[in-house]
Length: 233
Image (cartoon, rainbow, N blue to C red):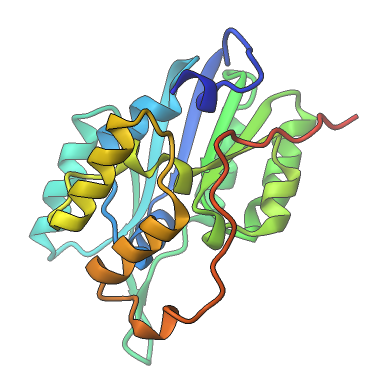
């Protein structure tokens, strides 16, 4: 894990502040058929640094007991939860936008941390990432590549590809296929699952992926190391 999380050989990332766009991450993980273990995710993101704060931003339904239990667990396991009540739109969809809260907190805490880690794929954060970088902080973006805007990746100092870290952040899987694939990856010292194997697992275990994806052109294997972007002048 050391090489993939610290490809540059840097000894420390300093004080780390983590900003998780909860709704964005949840839907990205759900799309590929996995569930995030947030204790594992926090440990992984803090690697090589000292945690200052870990914020989790999410919309909430006050009547959803299961969600309230989850948020209580998050508060007791290292996260500071920032929540906003879900709004119901005329078409019946429910949504809560916390982009402003995330951007304000990133800028407000700037100077208290050396490294900010934004867990989101939303292109709208590109301006905030640039603003934080211009104040002298290092900004890393973490997300699943297919769900992360290229523009957001480009403005970050580093992109942490969560696809290549699935074995380290996935919640104990329910399916035998997922268990076998993850166990094999760990046993062989792999830091990623082969794309063909991963796609097969996704299709068998996710209700969101069907046979229509089987004929799509396969993407290149996920990277073993996390690409580092050049520093901005």
